[in-house]
Length: 403
DNA sequence: CCTCCACAGGAAGCGCAGGAGT
DNA sequence: ACTCCTGCGCTTCCTGTGGAGG
Image 1 (cartoon, rainbow, N blue to C red):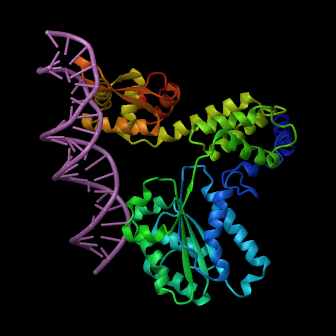
Image 2 (cartoon, rainbow, N blue to C red; image 1 turned 180 degrees about the vertical axis):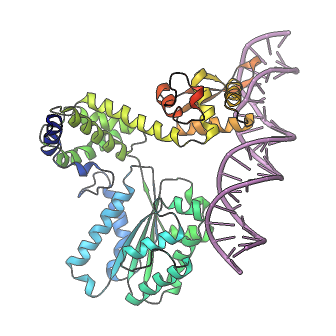
Image 3 (cartoon, rainbow, N blue to C red; image 1 turned 135 degrees about the horizontal axis):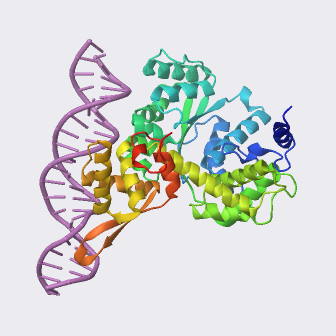
């Protein structure tokens, strides 16, 4: 038995910090959701008719990331099911819910497949045409005469890739069904999503609408405290850790997921260190680590020319579009690559700005024209490290040569 | 007050890849 | 196997613009 490993294993088996780590994970749905009472009541009221055997209105839920949309929806559905069971409802009225994450299941077939699976209708994984899968699902629902609440999370992904065809059919499915019924709960964080839909789909999908406002720092703190009670041992976190996580996340549009991530990663770092408790220092380290992971991931998946433009920006650090373009052209030539036009590079800079890798500001310098001054917005060495992993860029980066 | 720089950013269109329908 | 359609990256051409210097 290796001493080094035994140390790590022992520490991991009886954690001094975590009592139950999973309550900090993003997909955990707690028994109480502070500061979402209003949304819970509203959604509950909208879906409640299902208990009388009536079809609930379709609902459209909008809110930024980490505002509790998914958690509230799952929470209400779970309670609906429990209540139905408790009063012995299921001998008379029957209903079921199907949760589909459209980012994971982003084709028409996969959405139908997942919905079917969730309500216990077995479909072959492959081999069926989409139309046939749809027909079987409808027949299943009709045969059982159940009301199905279909929850389409991150619904914008489905529409962006496949259009609103399936949504149209689902919203109209109740005309085809004789005994069963379908209600749709659509969830998105894209504010203008609803406008991109066909007018008929739009009106029937948003029979009811629910908006989830961002949390403020105080509310985030409450959320973290209620989770921390379950997640940590007594005295495992230092004074100020929770309010720091809350205020950092509040600055980023009140994102509760971000706040929980910060707290979880900070505690993981503390545990790895063998520290007796989580301190503010660990939170700062967590922030840096999360940011670094994000930058790494984003830069890695950038298209080739965006990478070249980004490299040009890292090399001159701050410059006008013209200066960046010149540098970019030099780099392209060195790599034996045809440069794109300045117009295109201008758009690429805008894209990098939107992702948050650079900061681009339009300024007018009078006699010297109107342009955009762009600066790097993330640690230079992180960017260079990732860029140098691309063999097409590696030779252009000193000291980060590809090994 | 006017000019004119150095671009921003809109509009239209082209070639291509990949998916759907037949 | 074939057409048709759509989205994407890109080009070409274009009009618009805040303010320092004449």
